Image 1 (spheres, rainbow, N blue to C red):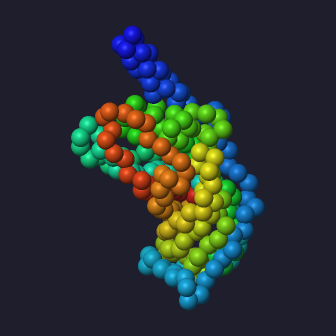
Image 2 (cartoon, rainbow, N blue to C red):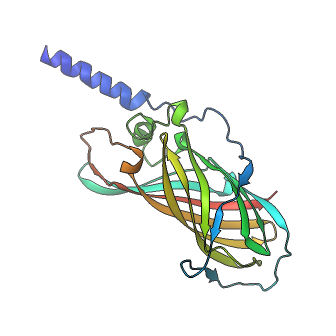
Image 3 (cartoon, helix red, strand yellow):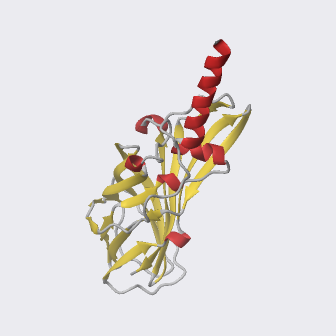
Length: 243
């Protein structure tokens, strides 16, 4: 009897572990959300602006332009530490399924306007198919369900973004907004670094540290996993093209 119960329990666990997360295919293709979010831009003694040295000195004309994240050159990722089979492991998960856009006047960077940033969490992959299935399951991201397939970020304020843009130059600043994962929304601040490559291309990165506790991200009870850190690095490496 005990053996039968154990077998049934093992079978149920195997089902949840292997099938509850689905196959990782997105429900629908992501489309770029519309502009319409004008964040509060803060500057002054409490904010720092760090300008990356320019390789050119030509200032781009003052005109508001829209730049759209190019999926083929952009990646959303997370990084977390775990102990797997008794050995420490640094796990990186990534996807190119990220969309968003922004509008900015090269002569007045503080005029920036954003759309929502959206990442398809179901398409995140690591170096392990087993881990990927677990991530899509209800305990971790629950991205196998249509309700929690997407991670969204709505920017509400920008700190330290002032001045003008020129080809070959860059700027560092911070953005704060509402990050929603697994149906839970929390304020999160990203450190941002961007560079204007040419008139039609902007590239950059945004990095933040969150915790699993903030978004009720659990860890399945699996014998091979002894420990998983609470701290998670989340980042976006992007190239945006003028539309």
